[in-house]
Image 1 (cartoon, rainbow, N blue to C red):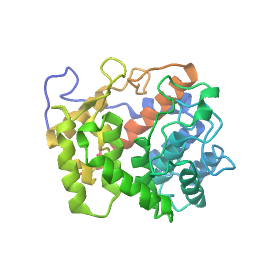
Image 2 (cartoon, helix red, strand yellow):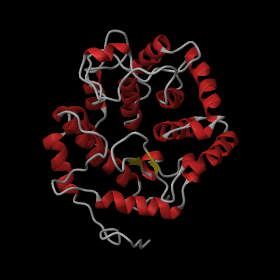
Image 3 (tube, rainbow, N blue to C red):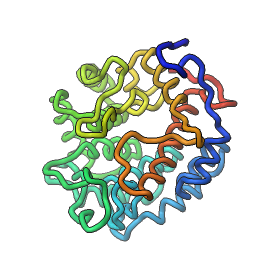
Length: 303
């Protein structure tokens, strides 16, 4: 689908060799193993084994698994990222998932909502926005989505699912990251008609290109259609037009940097955080492009 209006959008080809070299030069060991699974069909076991190094005795994940919280202690953002990694490599059946579910239940609020950041993070380097807030956070949506997919047995999960539906009753109150994880939640639930109706209620939050601005972020910071709904065939794709997805793919390809990697548009506040996030967003770009048949040697994927 030709798309005009951007100097590099009518025809873009990424340099996959340069992208993989960037990952080897800059990304964490965990993300290098993930890239090997993605690009070469490597076994997932090294990913799982490396992820275990981020675990704590309480069952949660810490140690800057989410690069914006550099604390060794378990954090909700790290728990979510750990589950995302396991889902990516098809290993949500790992015993550590049960441990994460139990840890999340232990730190959740009485109504089922999960805190954005725990108070212990304040003693360690962290992004300026990574501070505790009153009430449950958007991370609740993401945690419920992955633990539902894992078939986790947890009384908290049922309570938190109700919490998520209650939040969706007021779609105008949902900011950018709330929307992103709400869509993950809606992709995971079993009542398809209810989920599709909720997606329609969320549609007015999008801009004309399918993106949503991040209030309080850096200038121009936004979540694209492909960040909001990265997987072809996901239920949340009903929220986006073919043109929005096509333009998003071309834009994503065009954003590859001269060093082979991709960059992020939120605040870079430390060298370690910046390097780790660039490795992560480069891997995420390749995951999205691969899923849509846009990497060399991959068949075209349906929308």
